[in-house]
Length: 434
Ligand SMILES: *[C@@H]1O[C@H](CO)[C@@H](O)[C@H](O)[C@H]1NC(C)=O
Ligand SMILES: *[C@@H]1O[C@H](CO)[C@@H](O)[C@H](O)[C@H]1NC(C)=O
Ligand SMILES: *[C@@H]1O[C@H](CO)[C@@H](O)[C@H](O)[C@H]1NC(C)=O
Ligand SMILES: *[C@@H]1O[C@H](CO)[C@@H](O)[C@H](O)[C@H]1NC(C)=O
Ligand SMILES: *[C@@H]1O[C@H](CO)[C@@H](O)[C@H](O)[C@H]1NC(C)=O
Ligand SMILES: *[C@@H]1O[C@H](CO)[C@@H](O)[C@H](O)[C@H]1NC(C)=O
Ligand SMILES: *[C@@H]1O[C@H](CO)[C@@H](O)[C@H](O)[C@H]1NC(C)=O
Ligand SMILES: *[C@@H]1O[C@H](CO)[C@@H](O)[C@H](O)[C@H]1NC(C)=O
Ligand SMILES: *[C@@H]1O[C@H](CO)[C@@H](O)[C@H](O)[C@H]1NC(C)=O
Ligand SMILES: *[C@@H]1O[C@H](CO)[C@@H](O)[C@H](O)[C@H]1NC(C)=O
Ligand SMILES: *[C@@H]1O[C@H](CO)[C@@H](O)[C@H](O)[C@H]1NC(C)=O
Ligand SMILES: *[C@@H]1O[C@H](CO)[C@@H](O)[C@H](O)[C@H]1NC(C)=O
Image 1: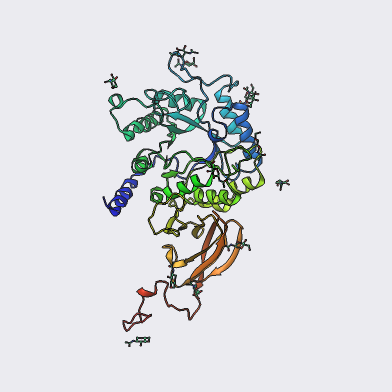
Image 2: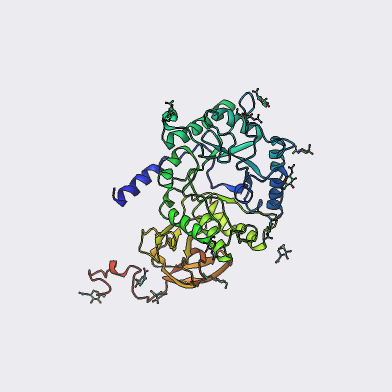
């Protein structure tokens, strides 16, 4: 298949995004897995929730928490229901979710498409409706659904799409049965080539990559994959770039080593590419820089734009020729539309400081012949007016996040007469450069 044919197929695939009334905007919240794996309980999870409240992150929009793997007993009860682990949740699961809700945080469940979750707790294969009813009774209204220990093909007689569709169908069934809104459904399945073909038909979010790691090469490779799947993003339809590692500088987690600039680039890409924003680091001792990055209201308001669902898209790859996949040097020049102006993300993928340059009209969302005011979404300042182009330097792995707004006609007498000079002519039919 040619690249064009592949793109056309993908675009048609995304035409059928599932809009069942939930999950219009990217989910924001916390996930217990990356910082704690199975080592958490009601007390330590609520300590994260309290830190979210105290640091202002709940107010900034992080209003949900995914209890990831390991919150039940390994065996179901005699009637087949999941049982919350009473040693981890001594006051019961309903008490836990009610406490979260009193803090302004809704409860998101984790489950699995197979016999067991990845850590060996009950999987929902064959228990889809029963488990949704349990989660709903416990106070959850969102499901992150993993893909470990799935049955043999001769048992399911379904492809991955059909196996995930079992739960999507059960969600619709339980909603009809109980009169409650359907669960928001997030696929934790990382065969990214296929996920954005069928994910949008049955869910509101789907992973596009394997598990994130708290170092730059992982962040860069996820951005590279996102540069080829950005068009799957819209309302009710979100590429999930995975739990965020912002703040994992190696202090909280000995293997993490993101720099401040890398963490800013990470957060910029996740917000502007309309990924769910799910915090994965220990917030009880987060630095002020970590809270400043995660709480960047200028970027969050674009991620949560109620009028524009599309994400930014690359207009030039930069280090590499356009449409080149390179895990270390993803696309550097991105732009898109928003309710607040034309958005630009410029990323320095090199290991040294670099000069960045772009012509405004390289972005489809810019009007030629106009000049633009420039707002910097990291310094939170109104900068110079941009005429025709912008140039600035960025540190290694650094980012610029800019919001451009129309500031009137460009000054008289600029040459060339056009951004794309080879396409414009005098009325007598002579090209302006002749
Ligand atoms: C919850 O976890 C914390 C931290 O690991 C631990 O100190 C505490 O004893 C645990 N509480 C219960 C009820 O298990
Ligand atoms: C859990 O179920 C397994 C398999 O049915 C059984 O062998 C085991 O004894 C059970 N464990 C508990 C604690 O009930
Ligand atoms: C199933 O068992 C659980 C745990 O023993 C119990 O809480 C629940 O009420 C039972 N459900 C039904 C439908 O009997
Ligand atoms: C949770 O349980 C504790 C201990 O019984 C109780 O003090 C608290 O009020 C309960 N919280 C909610 C929200 O039900
Ligand atoms: C499915 O395949 C496995 C492995 O070949 C085999 O052991 C099992 O009997 C088959 N099950 C069915 C239901 O055909
Ligand atoms: C946060 O707490 C963890 C666990 O106690 C510790 O290892 C880490 O160094 C702390 N991080 C910071 C940034 O203080
Ligand atoms: C960060 O950690 C990764 C994984 O251990 C390693 O490959 C990389 O070289 C480290 N980067 C820096 C700048 O130390
Ligand atoms: C971090 O922020 C808090 C609250 O704004 C402030 O009191 C504290 O001094 C800051 N700490 C540092 C190291 O800047
Ligand atoms: C915008 O101005 C601020 C404040 O002077 C500066 O820190 C920032 O780097 C500027 N942004 C760009 C893209 O030049
Ligand atoms: C950038 O635009 C200015 C007009 O504002 C023009 O003078 C300059 O030549 C342009 N730079 C490049 C490299 O195209
Ligand atoms: C920017 O515009 C200038 C002037 O039209 C042109 O010479 C240059 O090739 C353009 N650069 C890019 C990267 O589009
Ligand atoms: C076309 O018009 C331009 C601008 O007036 C002029 O410079 C140019 O010489 C004209 N070309 C011809 C072939 O008349």
